[in-house]
Length: 621
Image (cartoon, rainbow, N blue to C red):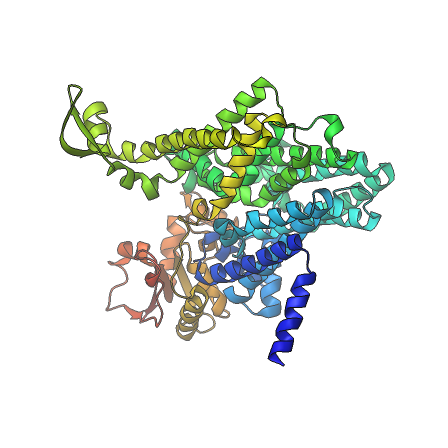
């Protein structure tokens, strides 16, 4: 029987075409990685906020925008969706993260479908593997945050709308889904006019009107439900003078936002943030730029539908790219959010490449060729700079010959000693910028290596060296994606994070009967609340310092979902239980004294993940 089963399985696999088999293997590998990351990645503030706020909203404990309620700083569906999932399958990380894994697989399926339709079987398979080989992105999409929600929605908007002869129901569904996506994250609003214009252009006036009506109905109803308070989310997008209630809120005595005070964000920090995004999203970001410089000739497109889809995708990608760069790199609120923002829409750039790659202009003009070489060197330099925390110190230890007055001296010196003696550069600057120089040098060697292959290849007659460089750089970049995109900066745990939080939450529930007042101090403490029932918290603490204000009228501050020092002190003196993260513990040593508080031992501690991690529980005696 075992032999028969084995033969049957072999025959089944043999009937699957090779491109589809490779894609299927990619999906399996993606699933394995996603499940592992779901269990070993520590939650962040956003995940805890989405989950606990969403659960309270789904249960009807609070409603969005109510006075003295939750601070709804993002569109409400980004909270409700996670709340609904927990209502169905149980509160906590387990159900939420497995749903995130499911959404990632669903998006991967959508990517394969649209790539197959507008590319070919091999390109569809490659598209899947670009995601499979990016562990940092899989790690991001395996947590309960807005990125995976929008990523999945956006992929299926494209599946339902791109190409020729899309059924009317699919186009209307794409419009509904696009509007729901904006009600999940308002930063995706640019897709609504661009999708409408594309449908009119590609699918005709009748279908375009139906899609536009669907978008307007969902978008308007979604706003009417929570009108007029929902317009506060658009205050940074629209002139607030147009909305008197928003203007009135803007002039309330709410103090100053703590996160905007003396941000100390340097230009170097902005460059580093940008370089991190290039490393993590190398293929869709660099690839989309290459598409522009290798834009196909009008006669080269397989069909008019391919051309129109590419125009739509390019417009959507670069509008989203520049708007998110402006919101992060150009401001001080969250400069290092750019790589996370890119996770919302990076799939658009990937699909743009797949739609256009077979028709690329393989003999671009001289100016385009120069731009291509410059971009390649910028990319390798940026990747080097992005890794300075990982490789900077090691590079400075690299041995170099000792020189004096132009003559070799006995023995060896380190690169750091040479730089310091010659240029008097500080160690921190050398550590930061030496990897960038190394990346630039690596880019030169990469170009020389590709040139060596080019001169010995049969492609010299069909494409010039610049185009060949792009293919080579993309293939090499894809091969080393796992090394480039390992989530270095993400808190990864050796033990099961989900089980750890379940144990901490269980112990918190034992010392926090219904009605207990809990004080939170830490960006990961909100997750512990998912395992307790009917406790009372200071709601603004769910957003930690992001909702903290300096001064302001305490009642108005609290009414609008914020907190300040006066509110914090009052809550501290009335709280029954304290949930404190390890890196905040030092400031509590004079308050949480042994004579007044009992420290609760925790059977599993997150400090095993990292010395600075860990959560401590204290109960007032």
